[in-house]
Image (cartoon, rainbow, N blue to C red; front, side, top):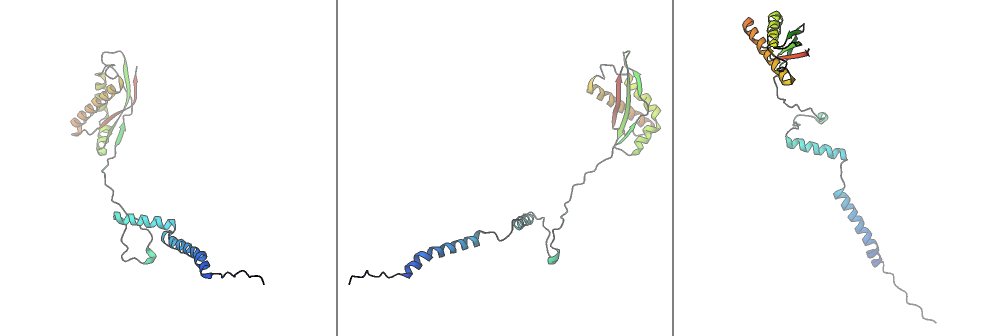
Amino acid sequence: MAEEAPKRKINFTKIALFGLGPVLLLGIGVGAGAFLFMPTQTPIEQVEELIEKKLKQAGQLPSLDGLDEENLEPQKVSKETPVNETFVTSYYTFADNFTTNLNKSKQFLQVSVGVSTQYDETVIENVEKHQMALRSEVLGVIGTYSVDDIDGKIGRDNLANSIKDAINVKLLDLEGFGGVEGVHFTSFVLQ
């Protein structure tokens, strides 16, 4: 009889330990990682939670005392805005153009003039009421300027300021109050 090869005994404990052990450890690691690091909220819920947290830190989130769960919708938060006092500017344009010769010149200037004020309508009513006297003042002021005096923007601004001062002096004389704050040229023709 030939010798029989010795039968190897299969060690199931070693197979279980080396075969199933790593699979079991891998499963436990994946499970623990998923539990610890996977978000339990959707991205939208995460963003809403962050916004709510920031609003609480800033003190802009209204308290939820006395509200039921049904009324937990976002509430509008009113902010106080600074109140700036603004004034309405009123304008008046003289009906006809002003045409007059310039000082020491054969040329003449034709302008359309408007005035503005932020006072009440009384100033505009006074300008309309005394239009003839004010037209005379404007023509007198324009006649004192030469061609060189009204050249460029600075010259025109100086003319406008002189007209404004003359109108206010005349209104002060006639009504006791001037109130014209600006003179504007709607047309300006030098010939």
